[in-house]
Amino acid sequence: MASAPLLSVEDLRVGFVTEGGRVQAVGGVSFEVQPGEVLAIVGESGSGKSVTAQTIIGLTRSPNSRIEGSVRLGEEELLEAGDEDLRRVRGERIGMVFQDPMTSFNPVYRIGDQIIEAIRAHRDDGGKAEAHQRAVELLDSVGIPNAERRVRDYPHEFSGGMRQRAMIAMALALDPELLIADEPTTALDVTVQAQILALLQRLNRERGLATILITHDLGVVAEVADRVLVMYAGRVVEQGTLDEIFYDPQHPYTWGLLGSLTRMDKPRPERLPQIGGAPPSLLDLPTGCSFRSRCPHEFDRCGEMPGLDARLAEAPQHRDRCWLTPEQKRERRLVDGEIGGEPA
Image (tube, rainbow, N blue to C red):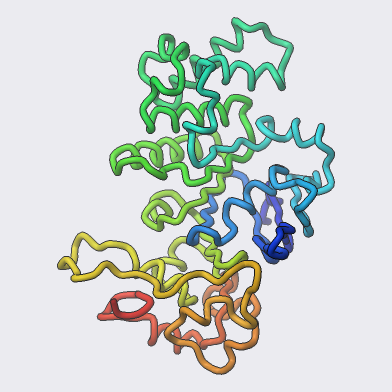
């Protein structure tokens, strides 16, 4: 018998009223996260990944936002939770690692003091000395050398990789059930990226920590994810297990993302592969499939919006949003013998 999901998101819709009109940043996203699972949400910038994550913990609430749907953490409905309830959830049950740790930390306070403040804001039963020791232990657990000394450093005294580790330490300070990591390897060199991913894997394994990993880098996804959601123009266009997405992808946008990966085992191309065109404006989404203007396989039926449906008999949990049959997809997704969007 399957265990109950830790997080359940159903038909989440997030819009923002602007001078130019209503921007529909997220348009009907649904997914679940099980305890101990790593769910990756991938897509280009502007696809709605970060807005989805921030809405889960109430960071998109404002007078000009319009939020609909359901976000349940266990038995608690977060979209209906008051500000005080959400403050309890943040950190205590859900930890968040933001994209840029340099701007997420306050530059005029020491790293340790900021972690201590996060701990004492939720748990005032211990003293400052106990919280300080906890901060040292957290920095040590994420691989910061000389944690007893470095806990007194300011953010600018840490390298980019160390700031990211410190941000992960702060997110884990209260032993949350769910960690949301928003582009945790952005702007880091390849070696440091590998270290951060190894750290997330270890934390997931040792703590049974459910993780939502938001990224545009499918190389990152291949390292750590159990399941993958592919988002485009605010909607999920494909979802499945890691193997299904990498070895049997069903949506042309996913093919383009996979085909855009630089291959080190192939001769250097004259031009790097890419997905042609640009994402549509969220102010005025096209009718039918949102990817149709960039898709080399568009046909008449693409003027209708396809549902996110199960189309593979051998993979009933897999979903995609494309009218092509599985046989047509497997034939058309190959470019020079490899999965790709279209020839460069």
